[in-house]
Every structure is written in structure tokens, then in C-alpha cells.
Length: 261
Ligand code: BGC
Image (cartoon, rainbow, N blue to C red; front, side, top):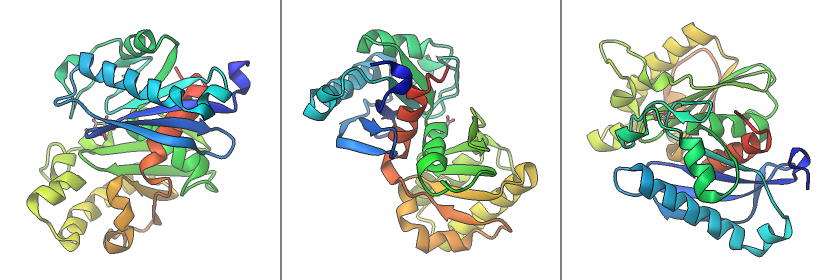
């Protein structure tokens, strides 16, 4: 099967707590068969993560549905700046990832070339292609509120990778994700109102910088969107992601099928 016209791709999302993956139906932007998941190894060091990715990949391929569809392109996403296959940052993973040929390492362990992108970029791209912002052909800024804050800027359906807007300095906070991520909300026991007070200046600032047509809020907490989205006071629509936990897998698969470099 010519990879260019693949109907399915394998997508794998390396996250802070789990490494998840599945076979992505590229036409409908949804998972075909079961989602597979293993725990992210403590501290996310390279060797253990590489092995865990291989395990997830093998589990995906072991499904009948994958075997039926032959060789599918593979896309992986991880929480780091990824420039042409090299991981260049490590905010919530082991520092040894900085300046590492991560794409080469994953390709080797899996035994086939893979594409590698930032996790928020994958999730954001998934949401714009098939999720909450599927009808938006303008400028969309997707924010993933989780362990950290990830960002994806998509304009006219094209991704501008590695925006890393979670690390903005604002109002005396040198790294805003450390003040306003979902994990910080949980750790500090903030109410949604209190969290909203931290998110509002952040979204306003992003609006001033990028003037998006719409914000999409992604990450596990987007399940509770009705509880807090209205507390983010900004003059641009803020909508909830719809692909939920599968956004990263789907986006990684889509970008894998496009042979994203
Ligand atoms: C990382 C980003 C990542 C985001 C969400 C941040 O700490 O710097 O690369 O996209 O967390 O996982």
C-alpha cells in the first residue's frame, strides 16, 4: 500500500501519566479498534519510554483490525519541542531528552520510520481537522491544560509547530504553566472561580499576541468544560475540545500519514 494514500495510521501519544495509542481512521478522524495504553515510566527516561512505546505499538498491531490494514504510517507525539525529529526541551520529562534524536530512536525500536511532533501540536491539529474547530478555516489557538500547558496554533488548517505558549512570562510569573495548569489547580485545591482568575489574564494576553478567531481548550479537564469555560473572560469564543483523550493519538496519526518532518 502506498503510504501517501494510507487509509489508517498508527498514532501514539506520550503523556505525563500514560503512553496511549491506536489505529487512526484517517478519513473519519477516529480510532479503529481499541485504544492501547501503558503507564509512563517514572520520570520518563529515554530507554524506558522507548520500550513502552514499542509495547504500545506491538499491542496496536496485535489487533486483528491492524493486521487487516497492512503497513500503516506511524506518528508519535511527546511533551517536548520537536524540531525535525530532535527533542529539544524537557519541561515534565527527563532532561536527557534535550538535544536527542528521538525520532531516530523511536524509528529504530519500532522498526519503521516514524514522524514525531509535540503533543499539544498533535492534539490541536486533531481538533482542527476533526474535532471542536473542524469548521474553522481561520486562526485557531488550542491550549491543552494538563500537567503543563501546551499550545497549538493552526491557521487555514496549517500547523505552526512548537509555539510553547505555556511557558510565557506574565504578571510576574516566569513560567505561566507553573501557575495555571490543571495540575497546579489540583495541587493547590483551587476552585474553578480561582482558576478562572488565573486563566483570564493569560487568555487575554494570548488574544493580544495572536488575535485568534477562537480558542479551543483541551486536556482531561475539558470534560468539565461547563464548570469553568465561562469563567475565562476574553472577547473571543472559547470552546471545549471534542476528541478528548484521543486528540493526541488522532493528530499524531494524521501528521504521521502526512510524513511530518
Ligand atoms: C511542554 C510542552 C507540552 C506541554 C503539554 C509543556 O510543559 O513544554 O512541550 O506540549 O507541556 O504537555
